[in-house]
Length: 52
Image (cartoon, rainbow, N blue to C red):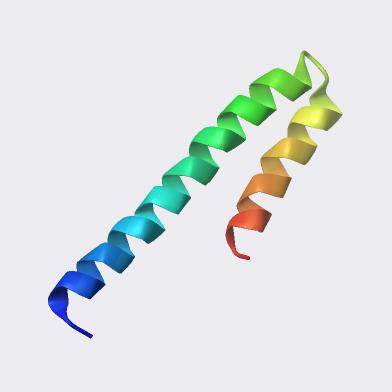
């Protein structure tokens, strides 16, 4: 694998990780609306989905 391909793969992986983390915060804030069980579900679902 060429160095340019490695850098591109690392950049894509970092971008997906950032999208998941930012989306996690947005989803948690919008869906929870003061409802703690929903906030906990959102907080546990996003990191679990990042692995797949």
